[in-house]
Every structure is written in structure tokens, then in C-alpha cells.
Image (cartoon, rainbow, N blue to C red; front, side, top):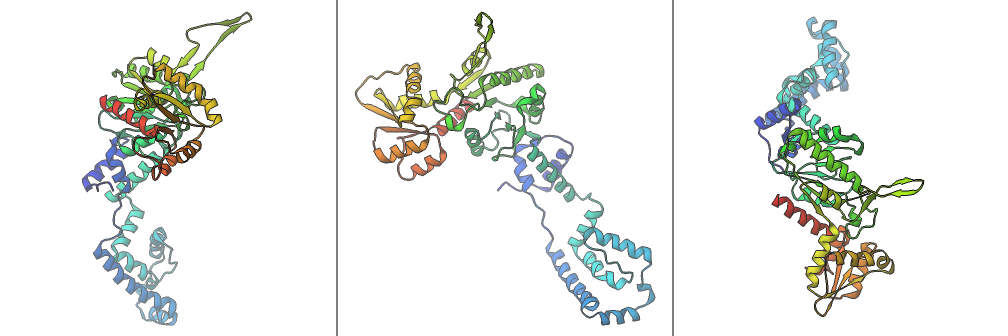
Length: 431
């Protein structure tokens, strides 16, 4: 539960929201969740008194109408309201309930008693007529902020050094970072994330103006770094050529726009962390009737982007995972185990990427790494083999949680999302 805000804080935040100013990110949950008590204890007591008096009049007028008619006959003439006054009272009752549509004061007395003695009733009537009470202004600002949160247009200030997280659909690593620290920074996405109200909307087709707009929602000048996630959670390790959320050439456009915006604003070049596979490629070709024209610009990868632009760090889940495997192997020969389909898809890629890291066996013994088309096949091998030298590589949170209860011991598995998240946390803290 967020800490309750004081009256002064509520009024200040209300004013900021109504003026379109940014508000402190850490105050958003407390402001949205704040509720005013419906009534005071004194008001509740007065409502009970008013309720019993109103019940008496209702009984006279509805249950025993003959008694009510007798009372109306003996009451002085001034109890018969002028027509205009009766219509004016009916207008008020219409704001909070149903009009009485009677001219005699007797029929209006229940409502008059309720709203004369009931504190809640007076406030309700007043609010319907003229909403200028500070509590009403807070509730109006809450409504406005909720709408901004839904649309991704909220304006928030974060502590200096925060991260700007550019995410796609279902980026679990980004989600895990935000759940660990809700104020790590805003998520910037084409649709509302389900894990934080602190987000900004940016669709792929918005261009430079869209990037400038969304960064203006936050104190982006004081951000520490940008985090880009062109990964697919189900293909973090050894992804195929096209198993990405965003292709490399779109990442290069995003990086270029960031750097151009920084230059136009006079900002220092912030660090850009890209979580993706260094070997995935966007290819372009120039051809004529005689054949292809080769160019240095034909191939775009995350590696070429990191080499081309300043202050970019590439976090490759495959490399991070393989380095962990190498550390665990400790010089033993590394074997790869999967279903027949898994070996066909991943076997050669596994040893290709391992060789790029320069690993060679230097002592006796084996470490068998298990990774497959899905974690369901890996789950079978974990349960079936019971081999202490079998090291499963797992991507799915659901499978990991299921196996952790009985079959996984500390240190004899690799859960890739946790590994990448920890790597990012280290890099962010360093920055």
C-alpha cells in the first residue's frame, strides 16, 4: 500500500495535473488510490435522525395517505408553495434523485430533511450544483490522470538516472525490471503494459515527432540510459534469423532518432542498451540487369549498429547464456542434448556461437547442455535423466516455477530471463 498523501500534497498534485505539469512518479499510485470517506461519524448520526423523520413523513404520505390528506387540510395555507418555488425545488431534487412533482410542502419535507440534516446530502447537492470544493477538484484530477494512464499520455518526473524502456509486446525482462523497481523508469510502447501505469505511447509510424513528444512527457534530459528490447521472449537463446520483435534496421532508425533528438536538445549522449541477438540481420540489395552491386550498407545487424554509433552496449542473451555455460563447464567438453528436431534447429548454431567465444575443452569430463524447441521437451529430460551433469537452459517462467519445486537444485540450471535481467541491472548500476 502506498503511503497516504496529506491534504497539501493532494492539492499540489491536483494543481499540477490540471495545469498539465509533470508530477513525481512515486506519487502516482497514492494519488490514484486515494479515497475520501463518504461521511463523518456526526454526519452518519444526523443521516439516521433524518432518515427516521423522513420515514415518518413517507409513512403518512404513502402508507397512510388518508392521514396525510387530513394533515394537508388542516395545515395553514402558506404550506402550499407558489408554483415557481415548487418547480425550483423539483429542479434540485432532479439533480440528486427524482422530482416530487407536488406543490404542497408536505411532499417536499422528506427531501428537505435529508439534505438539511445529512452532511453527505448537503455535500452531494452542493457538488451537483457547483463543483469547486477542493475534494471535488482532487477527484476531477484523479479522473483526468486515470484517463492519461489509460492513453499513455501521463506526464511524470523520475529520480535522475532513471531508465527509458522501449518495449514491444510481452517483453518479460522489461516487465520483471519494472516489477522489481516500479520507478526504474517509464515503459514506452505502442500499447499499455499491464505492469505499470508509468508509460508513454509511441507507435512505429510516428517518426521523429512521436519520439520527441513521448520523451517530453518525462524529465528525459535527466535519464541515465535507454533500454531497447528487440527480442522475443520465447526465442531469447539461439534465435533464428527472423525470430525478433523488431528487425535490426528498425533498431538503427530508433538509435538515429535518439541521437538526433539529443543533438537538437543539447543533451549529452546517453548510454543505449540493446537486448538482442548480434547475428540477426536485415539485408538490402542493389541490382541491375547484369547482377548485384555489393555495398557496405547491404547488411544491418545489432553489432554494426553498436560499432557505428557512440555509447551503445549490446546485451546478447545467447552470448550471456553461453558465458555462463562456459563458466559452469570449467574446461570440460560441452555436449548439446535435445530432441531430434531441437538438434536440427539448434545444434550447429550452438557450437558456432560457442566457437566465437573461443571455448576449448582442457580437461576430462562432460557437461551436457539441454535446450529444445520448447521447454516442454527440456522438462521431460530433466525429469527422465536425473543426470547431475545435465544443465537445462529454460526460457519459460511457468516451466521454471513448476520444476523448481521438485527437480531443480540451486546451480544446476540456467533460467535465461533471470540471467539477462541481472546483467542489465549490473550495467544500469554501473551507468
